[in-house]
Length: 436
Image 1 (cartoon, rainbow, N blue to C red):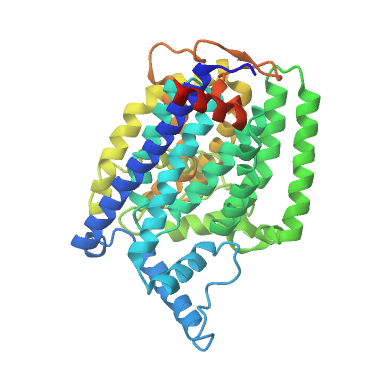
Image 2: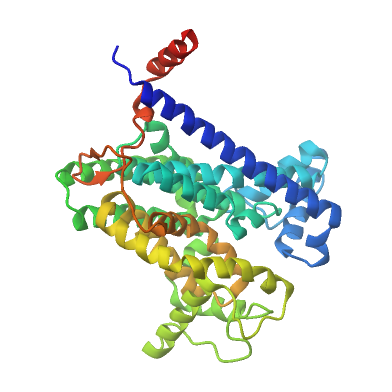
């Protein structure tokens, strides 16, 4: 058996990094949760009203289980699709006697796993130094860190979408089967946490793959498109059999392409301290070119910058300032990273960029409140973090010394030759190190 000790040591280092990243991320999140519980600052300043809503829903569901169905089930909570988080809170409350701390710890665990998945995704695309940089930045990006400590569904929805991105990248880069399985698992979880995002992803993923195969130089476009069509067919069958097709006609998902619904939401959301237009007129999308362009550009500004520096008048807006400064500081890196992605990693990374761009455009067009935009930005922020990590250093090597030519003709990272070791080879190498 021909083995490579360098690959063994690389695998050990990678596992150590993943465990360290998760443990440090989880410990720091639990520390913030304990601070919230001891000071009650999130209730005092009402940092998120959704947390109180989920707390009430969870208690009602837990009481329903404890009474054997004698108490009333909350009317708002229906099937699993789009209401998975409410069911989770209810089950956790039932098991732990209404412990919000337990639910917050689960959120923290999901928030700590997501950066590890970001690192694994980046390792398919770029060198290990850049991939680790992306993982660390993801772990401590302020909004992502903060909302994973609150009793809201954002942590789990971000986790599920990061799973989708990992699965997509594994499919594109001919990665491991278990990483490819992250795609259907992530889509199923996304349907449970945010059904309308699931419908958008289900429509965008095949389109982005096909567009990428057309825009990228590849020696195996036909085989890649055939694999995509096969995956679409399998996903459609599984979705229909499992009831996921109901996500396309439930809740907000039924109005994804309804422009009148978008304008209604724009009017409804323009209130409170985070209102984008204040008391002024809200431009309606689709009526005139000027109003449409102005509305979308304004939304894009608040999607990335989050606050209007001329009218900061709430505690939560002051909390957003550090993150705003970080985003502005990273803009040059994002621009440089985008150019490097298009030059070196077009085939592997372009599908992620297209999806991130589409979701960014959608939220920027619909939302007229800076607060929700900060939260919903979490669904694609890890893609922008990856791009910024690629563009951060002045000099860049797309691989770790030894490049690998993929079947599609694009230069990819070598994806750690350690990850190509079989389990038997890994155990053999470990045994040899012990003997030494």
